[in-house]
Picture 1 (tube, rainbow, N blue to C red):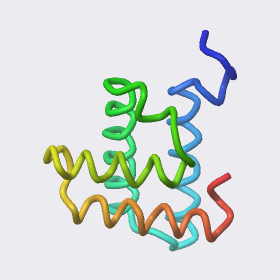
Picture 2 (tube, helix red, strand yellow):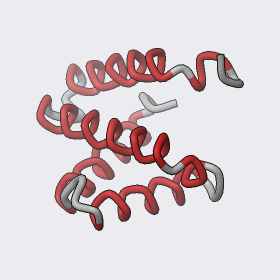
Picture 3 (spheres, rainbow, N blue to C red):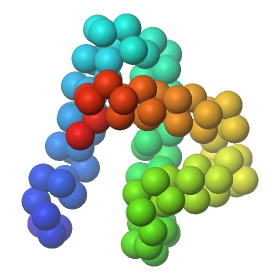
Picture 4 (cartoon, one colour):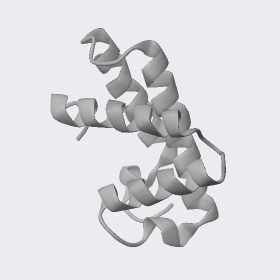
Length: 100
């Protein structure tokens, strides 16, 4: 098992993310479509880090997110619109206090 226990458990993280998004939909902070796109982009980011371990090793979480999203758009894994929606949902979740 990796260091940090649940913090690095991808299944626990995915379950937490799903619960957070369900609450956000319930509170009308995001739509189901936005939540689905957020999850898809997050999954792409997780795959990017798995393939590029050093990508998650430097900078603040915000800086790493910017770099990863740019790389995913550049390699056409996601579109710029998907990256923009991810950032919008991410900001709404952070501002609402749902994202901890």
